[in-house]
Figure 1 (tube, rainbow, N blue to C red):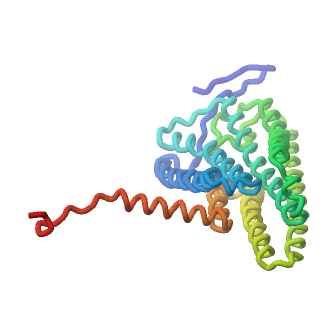
Figure 2: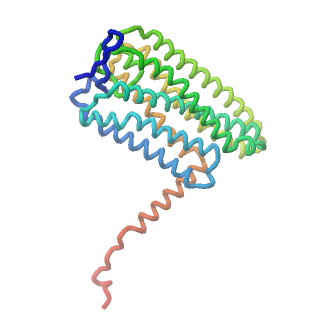
Figure 3: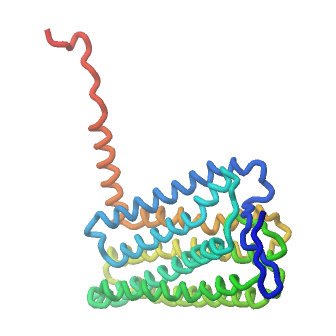
Length: 334
């Protein structure tokens, strides 16, 4: 039975059932293998690049450390959702308390916004490196980097906290079933029985303002960066600068296009089934987590070289550990 709380003469559910894919209730166990495989690929790919950056002293530079931080956020974002989703699919225990639901909502949105803020910090780092290379070592110090990451944390918290705070004040009496695999904001708001116009307005305003401001800052930064890169006289240095910017721009395109496409489809394709909307939510949350390490691992020369060395060492170690075949009867000593 669902728990109820009574306050201000209004009844409200305090625990909910997460019904991830309503149309697949009888066959949800079949979703365990694909989502588990996807999660293991995400963790392995991101962890491999992070290990490469941490293990190689030559990669202890701001750009590579920010890449490692971005990939660590990818692992956290996937871990916030996928393990609990797999547990509910396999055991059919999918009840979640309101407090736990709000914590999960905060973590999901915080990590998404923090991911975008790291991209802003990376844009600033590349702007200084390419537009003012001589002063780069004295400008982009470890202290400045830590300060910028701290600002990113505070900004992410300031953007997400009002949305989650307003959600915590809503009364939920329509149903105790959330038709989603996680505590997504609008999925939870559908269960409300009061006026949530403020919640919708704040959520939409924060999302639009945050996205527009971020894209404006990124557009200005990378337009200046590309302009400065084309003015570099050395062809090799110019190619390296453009290749690095290309990797960052691919990641930015993946993150923002997946997020925006999910929001557009959510508002336009209202006739689509809930399963389709949930699949798109999983797509926009997990796709960047899978693609980002592939982009940085394949396109960043220094990381790619160290990954090649790492794979070569692993191959040699496996070959060395293979048991030697026993000598034949003719080869035995007399």
